[in-house]
Image (cartoon, rainbow, N blue to C red; front, side):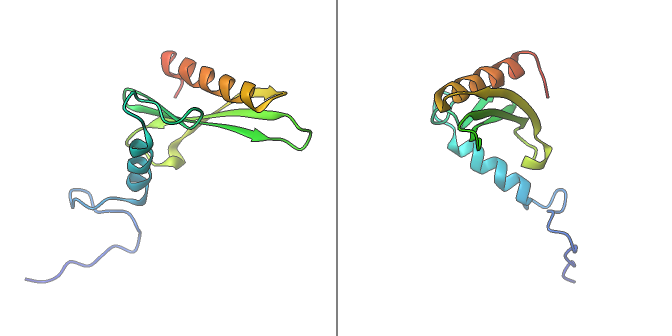
Amino acid sequence: MAQQEKHLTEEADIGSGEKSPGQHDVERDEQALGQDGNAAPGKILQSGTHLARIVAVALPDGTFEAQVYVRLTREPEVAETYIPAGTFPTEREAWEAAEERARRAFSEHEF
């Protein structure tokens, strides 16, 4: 039996059972989720078939920007929808705003 040639891309062949790099990223994120559907505060939230990655980024002026990235669980990170959630004076406020914005994105289907 002749051996099949591999494609030049890193993507898995459809139906081969192989996982693409994006699928490995999604599995890593899903494994990070806790039993209640939430990871450690301020990291990854899940609602049904969607994941939200939330981040509080320190800015040079000492404030923090709350960011939300939402995607389907089966999509790689490059398919994320970015949702800015504002700038806040403290890191705690930025995390809280990012989580609140992610939950609103889930409920309003903003993907």
